Amino acid sequence: MIVAFHRAALICSVLLLIAVSNAARTSNDHGQPKTSAATQSKQMEITIFARFHAFEGKQEAVASELRDAVARVRTEPGCLGIEVYRSVRDSRLFWLHSRWVDEAAFDKHTERPETNQFVERVQRLIDHPFDVTRTRILGPGTDANSKPAN
Image (cartoon, rainbow, N blue to C red; front, side, top):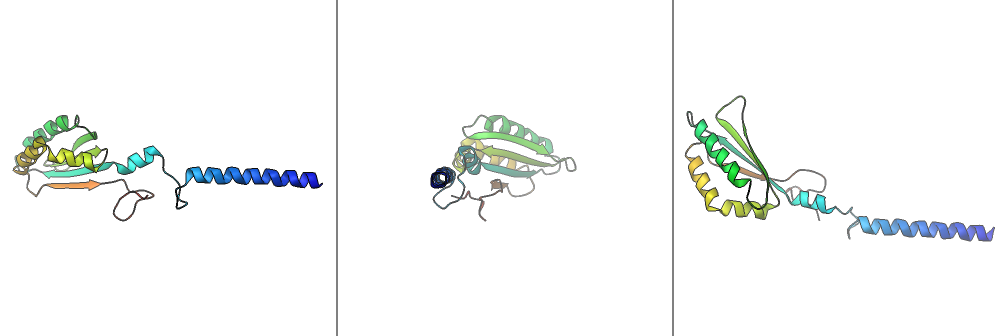
């Protein structure tokens, strides 16, 4: 009976060591679950939304500028994807949606002469100030400022 008790205690001790080891591998220093490299990469990603509402009669010029920009930007380092959408209810309203590996990649994009020239050209065609919003996916582990948790 004593041998059986010691064997059971040994098994429990081994199982406890395995559980502690697994917890250490899957949590950070604060006991919170670790995130995978893919999740961390996704948390660094930045998504851009830009709104363009053309002056009356300038919608095709805006569409042309956006098509050209998409073709150029798609090949830039750090760009994960870019699309332009046109409203089905207002043919003068366009939305640009782009994804970047991180904010630094988008910052480099905004510093390019071609980007600044595009902004200057399109600003003359829209009826509002240039409107670009930087976003991150809202999900578990993000704080009020949409930055990834540590």
